[in-house]
Image 1 (cartoon, rainbow, N blue to C red):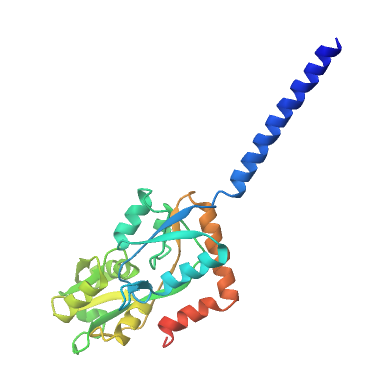
Image 2 (cartoon, rainbow, N blue to C red; image 1 turned 60 degrees about the vertical axis):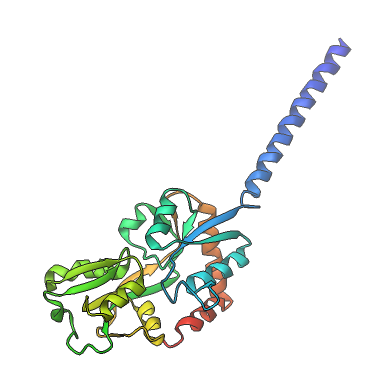
Length: 260
């Protein structure tokens, strides 16, 4: 009888020990789910001053430097994937990337598919023409003419919203430099671009000039797929708050758009 009782107690203790160990293991896994993980973060290739290559071939810009500062603040690792805007979004939707940071405007349509961080930059849209063009000074001057836009940008969305009212045709480009070149060669008479991007480009002698005031646009956000990588989004928001508080955020902005 005593032997049976002892065996029963031993078996009970062994089961309890196994269950307890299993519980500890799960807690450890949950607590360290980001440990050792390297997030794949896609970005644009040319969207200065947010992302572009410097003379050494390194990717720099507001988005790149901000991501680095936030990752350092929050202690997560990532691999940057400069793909171009459309390819970056496609990579996110096909699970080839965990997130996108690419001057991506937060819009109602995009919020149906993506979860966004808190806005990290408030932007707007301007119209630009060749620096030597004295004929195009307003939207009314675009009638019957061709206008260049970059696919997937706030500038393209705005141009699409007014093209019927002002009766102009749109030409689409995947990269901003190609869009600028189309305007400079006269194939398109104007282009629509995000204000900080165009402002930076003009200071770098891109051959264009702004001829309209800034139209209010959407804010930029860091994006993940709906209900995915929530821990990464939370870390981005916490890091963004911290770098704003400690001054690193403003230092990054001042480095690229201090003339604004």
